[in-house]
Image: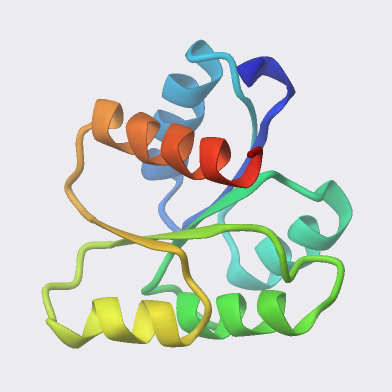
Amino acid sequence: MASTNKVLVIDDEPEITEIIMAFLSNAGYDVEIENSSVEGLARAKTAKPDVILLDIMMPVMDGYEVCAQLKKDQDTAQIPVLFLTGKDAKDDAGLSFQSGGDLFIKKPFSCERLLNMVKMVLISINK
């Protein structure tokens, strides 16, 4: 079941994407990573992942902008977006949802918590 689910991780910190990729791969997911917001946006359109894990604070385009672009494109509009952020501002969660995000996960997070969030989103879209 989980082996068919594809997860795209877009974060400008390679250490974070590597950790998430290793953990979710071990859990049976097909994981792709991008360390650039622009490349991540392009990869989302070609890879057609089941869920996207998206950092908010990135150079060139922030996560809000990437999410808004994904939601405007009919090919990627239905893909759930889970925002990952180290920011502490209370309005981040609001902005996450305004730009089309589905969940908001604050860094640092445990890999188990992230896995549970991914499972929860995939269960809800596979109903």
